[in-house]
Amino acid sequence: MDNVIVVASGKGGTGKSTVCICLSVALVKQGKKVLLIDCDCGMRGLDIMLDMEQDILFDASDAVCGNCSFEEAVYKSKNNDNLYLMAAPFDTENELSPSVFKQLVNSLKGNYDFVIIDSPAGIGSGFVTAAAPADRALIVSNAEPTSVRGGVKVRKKLEALGISNIRLVLNRFDRKVFNQLGFYNDLDDVIDATQTQLIALVPFDIRISVIMQRGVAGLNWSAASSVFDCLALRLCGERVPLAFTG
View 1 (tube, helix red, strand yellow):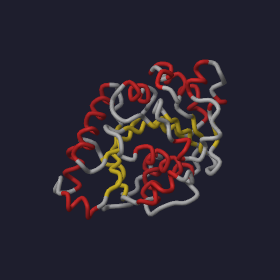
View 2 (cartoon, rainbow, N blue to C red):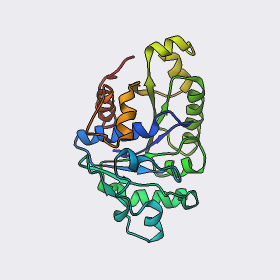
View 3 (spheres, helix red, strand yellow):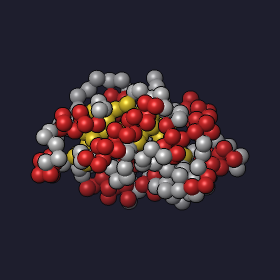
């Protein structure tokens, strides 16, 4: 199974990091051992969202610079068994090159069922690094034009990097707001505009943001949990319908 997945978005604010954590927790619920890697150098936040900020002594750059072993830069979630985190460097000057990051991930991935990589938004150098070791990709977008256009750019860049297994996660979807804004006639129009096959439709739920900012992912949950459970099953190769149809 291709078990290294990069999660990307064309612009900030789509909820990409939240998707990474919710998906990782859902995979753990399926009995999988998951390594979550924050690749957003200089802007890391997964440690806060998982209530692990005080636990992190070493990050990915420390591992490759020899300040610690690769394993010492991996931290176990205190709230979720079988979920592990490698933090991004605090400083942008410590951003890893694609080849070095690929070597790092390749040395670790055999110990996990899945490696989920949280890419920085956009298609800059950090994105190229995050995508380097990936077998497949998830593009996180909202159902609005600027987000969709960014998603298209991400897809084209992923394909240029040799990644062809790409799926779309439409996040924070609110049917009432979608209809009121009228950017698209229906969901099919959104999917067509992204040029990417839909794998999950996540409803807007303010509780998800609250849960993440409090660092209690996996302890408290929301109405969207069934969607991420479904997404996890799909990534494991099971044929299941969309859990939320809008």
